[in-house]
Image (cartoon, rainbow, N blue to C red):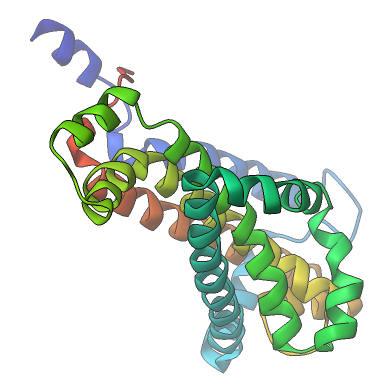
Length: 265
């Protein structure tokens, strides 16, 4: 009881602790621009970025760019996660499948993701199809690897218990293997969500055709509007944070049976 009360005494409320560093950086940025610590045109004041944000919001440009980026992101994520789960389960359950497909898969996963861009642009062009295929690849590999590791890490004692209880093959998969592997599988999906959002920006930079928040940043760079570029960076960060927060909450809810974390401070 005494220890819990000591850990709760903190000058900054728990809900606001994550904002301390961002607010400190914004304050430093404001001071640097106000006091002209740098004469570079790259250092634009926060007020100008705020004006750009308001203009982007009121004109609808922000909504259109975010819609385009998130639509590609979630479509590629859905395709990559679905394919990754199928391949990961097959890898984990079948030694034959692993021996036949494994060498090719482990070779392909070593290829840099951005090395696929020239090939995808030839196959699918520069439109959304190529971008979605690129995002699917970004989501595919972490899901496969984490699903495989999760299934292969199922304790032997549980498998023996399933034999004693005479589980059918479907019961063995749905009541034993997948629940036991769930933490690893969900971690892979969480990683896929992160990688897919990062790949969304990469795809929009390298496959320039179409709308998106990455294209907004490209427009700012080409017109030397650093306020627009910084605005895009901030939006990308906030969206990434929101996606990560949502995935963490879902993962926490689905894995509530594991109990509390060991973290104490």
